[in-house]
Image (tube, rainbow, N blue to C red):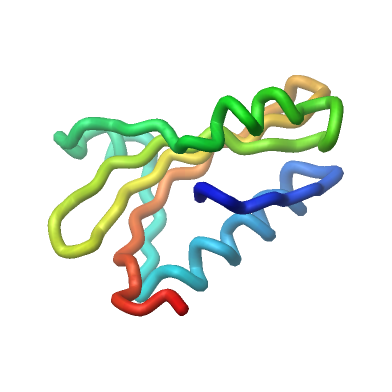
Amino acid sequence: MSGEYINAKTIEEYWSQLKSIYVKTSADWKDLSAEEYQKIERSEREDSDNHFNAERLGKETDVIDICHYKFLPDRIAAYHIEILHKDKTKQDHYFMIKLKEDIG
């Protein structure tokens, strides 16, 4: 999610922190498979922080995320989050959320 700054040592720790950010901004959460995400016929967008995160990997932090998303009607967004560790391991997460009306 654009604007988050997470500093974690493991992929699991990173995902836990990142997921909690998304959960706070959502009214509903649904895990997706890679196939379900790919079947969504909407244009995929890249998070504006992806380039910044890639530059931080191995320098400022051990783990980063690369985020892509698809907007759907009714404040729904589907996400593909790729979590990368400096040791070259990675983990993919797919989910769909309904954004809260008032995030504050």
